[in-house]
Length: 460
Ligand SMILES: [Zn+2]
Picture 1 (cartoon, rainbow, N blue to C red):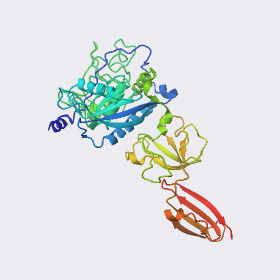
Picture 2: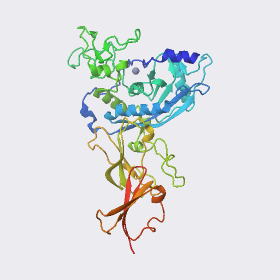
Picture 3: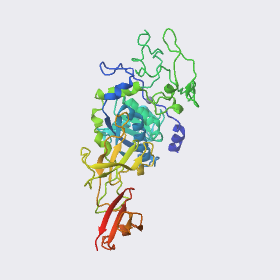
Picture 4: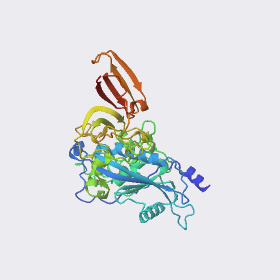
């Protein structure tokens, strides 16, 4: 009964409990730039991320779909941050039973206070449920005080499990990357650095291209009193608190900003200045422990490559994380295991055997087919599709169908006879032996969609 009550009570609580930072920025780290060219010479940075699903103390779990939602969060993070050349490498997900505090009859699952959340993360850290080399996201059940909370800057955040697949995870990781809420009653409207009341670089989120605002969400009405929830435009007449009481200058992008707390209007939108601030926080070294190599993005997060000793198509699907545009180009090498990332000596064609959108949500379909190399679209790179990597060309993989084309005149013309072959037929070891003398084309078709053709002239 307690759990049902909590679910009903907390279902709509999307408020973020991350406190506003009143600490001035340390000197020499942040440029407060809003120049898109900032990213031109910035190499990709790849950050490990790991998720923990918090279950009831007795092991019960309200969120059967949580692993799928976690993968959606990974996709959302990459779709949001790749434009800043920030990538997230999914390192895994574990379900763990929550502990129980003596004076907390509900257990940790329903977090009644923010200090209980901190108790949860302290317990997790002490018990091996925190990765030292990754961002750690704790998908808790419900909380009385909000839907998410993050350390800022930091490597730990918590998100309510029913929000893990929506914008809230991207919002909390934004806090980890030292992005504040755009709201602040102390930030002034002017964006002119020469204006004596200019304080956009020291007040509020300390980002210059997010407009000053007092906050769009009012918790007393649980509504956005000055935001039209249909158009997501601001219609208020509020002013800043400078001596001139300058009206706020808030546009649609400020309302939908993912750090803007306009709830129903929040979208996957961050400004250039926010992206630069996140990159500068990374450059300052706060996340060095979680940084990994670009090559890690070309490794599966689950599944395995084909094992000739146990040939089962269903078992061997090396799965790749969602959130990227992939192209799998036809390639050729002696590679029963994928070539190392650094080895680009294999040959490949422009034939795309498989293409995956970053919005693909059938995650089981995102796997590395045989006879292909992986290309991941890197936003903002001069080469739209970078060098394909990790050619996987396993000769033990058998075709599942094919055909034999006989050229009846023993020359390449249109006088042909085509015989379709099923899996057994095309894999018959005596296939060529059984052919009459003559000129043939043997086509082998693979499950992945590619084909191989051999021309055979069988002598009398
Ligand atoms: Zn927040």
